[in-house]
Length: 370
Image 1 (tube, one colour):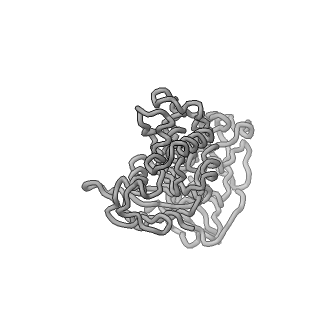
Image 2 (tube, helix red, strand yellow; image 1 turned 60 degrees about the vertical axis):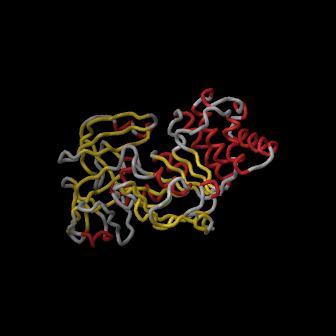
Image 3 (spheres, one colour; image 1 turned 90 degrees about the vertical axis):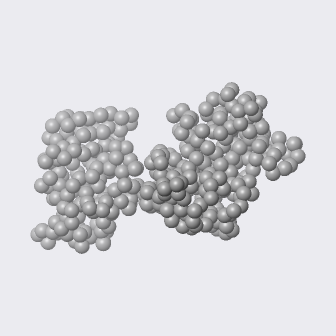
């Protein structure tokens, strides 16, 4: 069942249009990550859903009913902010209990629920502490407990891991999916971290230029981005974009990369003559010191170890730079600077129109090794 529907939502502040005709739906128990660069309106969107702001146009429906004009405390929405937003004069237990007290209930009932959620989030030993006595990790868990304690149907998490240390961020990426499944809340999770988005989201909604550029599973966003903007947001190093042109010759269709043709198969015959960017993820490129059929001649310029991976800077024959990456254990033969060969699966190429940046899709599937 659909738990949340956004239909044509628009919001402006003076002459600055932040969101324009934005639509999205989320099913019960689903986690949808709202992902995008800073300033794209992610927090504004959460505040519209929670009732802090009213949209200029459009409708927001929770469990099938419009909540336009409904007060925030009556929407059944829980929200955790990136800056924790804890009451500084209250102990952690009082902060967590505040949504329950607003709804009413006996002191004993409220205390039981606070203890239960605090135990689940492993902060039951700091319930008597005020925010200034808590670590950032404890503040983050206290804010999350406050958002969860009333069992909201909709949970809004505004980049809650942004201000915590790297170790806790990694731990919470592992723990949060379990917690969210346990509470069965429909969750909208805002982040600027693509790894976080891919780890936590059942689906990712990429917010750009006031609307969703793409809404899909993490795997589909990564492997099948709709345009260059989306493709560049995911991956480290980012996707290689090599200027090229689709050419038909000798009965085949290929992309010319610095004088070396890559056979694209018949799927791209409809795009013959178009100026393109050939997009290829660094991890999809294999580097060898020996020539293989169809491999691109390259110059290996630099090799940089990055934890468990090695990143290689390469030049094509015309000087075009691009990157390849490989697991540390598989890159032993790729460390000598100088001439080398780059192997690519044509099916790993993402073809983008150079004028618009939009993805050009093949009309038939094709996969073969260079």
